[in-house]
Image 1 (cartoon, helix red, strand yellow):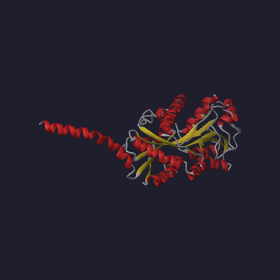
Image 2 (cartoon, one colour):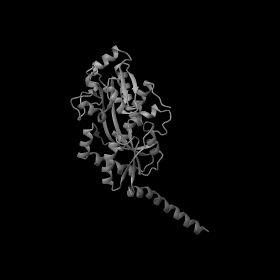
Image 3 (cartoon, helix red, strand yellow):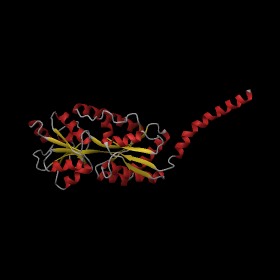
Image 4 (tube, one colour):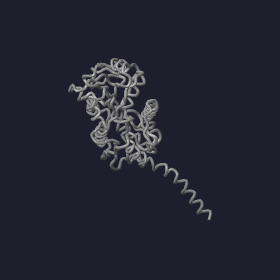
Length: 326
């Protein structure tokens, strides 16, 4: 039946361009239903605040609801793992943080791979931590803190919001670059850690500006420096760590938007373009600046490069600190 074989061959040839059109058509139709934005931390924290501001603005631009889904636990790993295993269709997104770079070395089995299990979309925010101490502490600046730690090995302590968090690793990087050894005191969250710093139970803490600056303004904490490459517009009178006595030091806290690997490039690009419009809005930039963040848009390619660099940078700090979580 040569005519039948000829007909089937013709149909198969015609099907190839049709199949090629399907992903493009799906991308063009995206989004056609609500989008889930996973925040791997509890409600009310810095990452959750960023997600809700960005989510609301994205919803307005994309014409679909953005549902913020808080999935806390395991240092951000539970939420990240859920997104990594989600369908790569543009309807599930992760608000990633510095921890998702740190966790690649800190955890023996995080359950996902930040390098390979996600497609980067854009940075969302970046900002420094702030180094704080109690007003009664003898050290009034970074140079005096280093001198105090050097004169009293192991007796100067630093609090953190948990083992392996950015508040921990920023201090480990400080120790390494300054050639000192402060003793780490981990807490379950920022609030109890700051409380003990204010009471003098721990000497210093590197914390987010959102958490620490209200206590600085109330005179309950003294800010020694911020950890960025430049002074923060939210506190321009506070020097950087590099300016205050440790040249070359820089540590930033950041948020980025990632989607599961395999998400169509056209969907990623459409989402990135929408984010660019959101993150350049003056009201968004002003709101983030007041909390110590800079609204930061980057292309998907540049976002991927940045995250890879952060994995390498913090991997070295984790290994030097000896911190591990099974």
